[in-house]
Image (cartoon, rainbow, N blue to C red; front, side, top):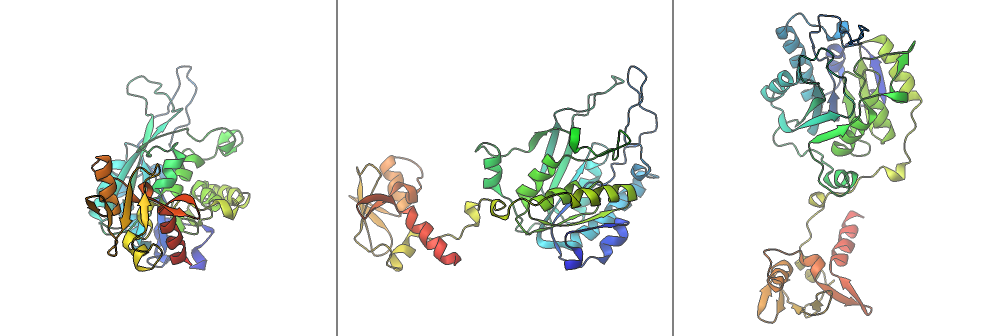
Amino acid sequence: MLKFQNKIINGDCLKELKKIPSNSFDLVFADPPYNMQIGKILTRPDASKVKGVNDKWDQFQSFKHYDNFCKAWLVECKRILKDNGSIWVIGSYHNIFRLGYQLQNLGYWLLNDVIWRKNNPMPNFRGTRFTNAHETLIWASKNKKSKYTFNYQSLKCLNDDLQMRSDWKLPICNGKERIKKGGKKLHSTQKPESLLHRVLLATTNKNDSILDPFLGTGTTAVVAKKLGRKFYGIEKDKKYFKAAYQRIKNTKVFEDSILDTIVNNKSKPRIPFGSLVEMGILKPGTTLHDSKQLHNARVMVDGSIKCNNTEGSIHKVAAQILGAESCNGWTFWHYNFDGAITPIDNLRKKLFSKNLT
């Protein structure tokens, strides 16, 4: 696998993908040709030309030809993905529905469609349609049973402690980040690093392997390198490949100590309260109480607790005291430790850390 780590190659993805061993990558990010079918020269109201996507690599003989092309690389990507891997594909209204159709037919399991709402989209100069202000990403796991990575807590932190929604407002690639040659943008559809930062932060972890079969000017590889992920990119166009190579070479990795993401609660091993009793960490008969010491309960030999005439689990008894449907007993109940009132959750965390070492 070292042959396919932290490298990029100048070649045709349909040929190069076949060389990669099966079950090799944790994530695929694919930004394929959109097949936009632009036949006319686009102009602004002042008659100046608009640099649209009219490159030869975005032109296909027919929808059938495009569909066959997409099916071929998606088949290879599915083979290459690890069993718990996932894939992102991005496109516009021209192709995203065709890609979704292929993904489902090939057995991928669709998890989300994400709207990338652009802060600064190109206006519709002719005034004949709505301004195309977004692109769509589809996120899918290799199959229905895949235990894919999703860093829920990290995304929540990224979004000021609110759940991350599936509509992302991010700017297009512009300014110093945009690669230009002779004053003109080198690649017509270069993606912003902010978009890839969110994708990789959400669905990969440090040292995971990421494949981009349509690397372009290297945004996926650049962000992967910064975040301490391994990358492998394929790019057919030589001028894009050279730009990507130089860009990756100039990219510095973030300090290793800041690359870890928050462990999701669901991915932590479940530790029942009774385990503390069985292991002698909390002895039967120990008195527990709430933070204000208004309610007291005693620990029973079976890991249940008893408060007056109410008995059951730490969660059930706490909920009944509060008159609530549910309550987290780990944070509600406290015990005395060296004269200090301490949440019993500290004991669980201590036991959890022991299990890791």
